[in-house]
Structure formats: C-alpha cells, structure tokens
Image 1 (cartoon, rainbow, N blue to C red):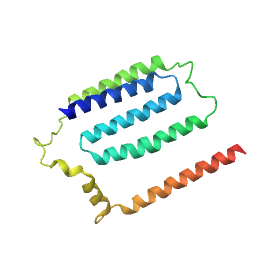
Image 2 (cartoon, helix red, strand yellow; image 1 turned 30 degrees about the vertical axis):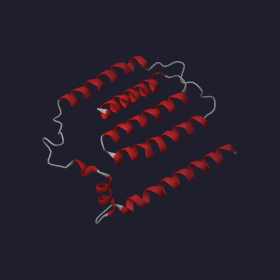
Image 3 (tube, one colour; image 1 turned 180 degrees about the vertical axis):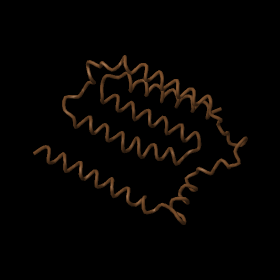
Image 4 (cartoon, rainbow, N blue to C red; image 1 turned 45 degrees about the vertical axis):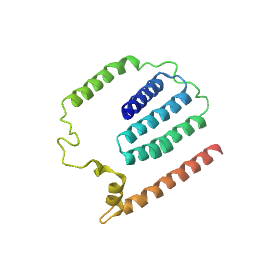
Length: 168
C-alpha cells in the first residue's frame, strides 16, 4: 500500500513539474521545475526496483543535463523571461494531438509482458549487478566506458576555452 501511495505522490509531482515547465514564463524557474520532474521520474524508477535506471537518471539528467541548462541560462544575458510573441502555439496543437493519439494507440495495442505471468525471466535480471557483469565481465564493454569520460572532459575543456576566447 505504501508503494502505491509513493507512486501517486511521485506521479503527481512529475506531472505538476511537467505542467509547470510548459506553463512557466520564467526560464530559470522552468529549468528548476525540469530538474524536479527528472527527480520524480528517478523516484518512480526506484519504486520499480530499477536502481540502475534511477542512478543514471539522477547522474545524467539531473546532474549533467540539468546543471548544464541552468548554467547556460545563467551565462546568457537578458534572458529572464521567455519569448513574448509565440506564433507557433496554434500550429503546434495539431502536431501535439496527433502525437498523443499515436502514443495512446501504440500503448493500447501493445501486448505488454507482465513479470510472473507471461515472462520466464526472474525479476532481478535488470539489476545493477547483472548490468555490471555484462559491462565489466568477459567480452564486456570496458573500452567504450573508458573513452566516454575522455570525450566528456574534452568537451568541457573546449567549452571553457570557447567562453574564454569569446570574452576577449
């Protein structure tokens, strides 16, 4: 019962933050609400016992992308509010309605596998230990995992150099 209550609290928080992202006119508050939405989704992953996805959600989306968005907003001058005249609202409505209809159609016509009934896989196949064994075990993916941080550090250093050159 406690998990159901926690799920609904997180779902309402994520939905409220998502609506706040769309409705807010202040760009900085929009970014903070987006971080709140990311955190609520991470909480839902924890409730689903997908601890690896929750950790990735927090590290990548909240930690990296969210902070990058906040820093980009803070480094941009004269951008305390969003666009005053938005002429794309009416053309976007049919596109959003068609996308929502497609998502609902796909969700209703998909044969979902439910653990314990149709699936022969145990519940813990997607645990962090299993994923770690696949990455670091025999025939794992250690080299790409070591190359990615080098690329990220190079990107950050390049961004710092570009900002320094632009200020001069």
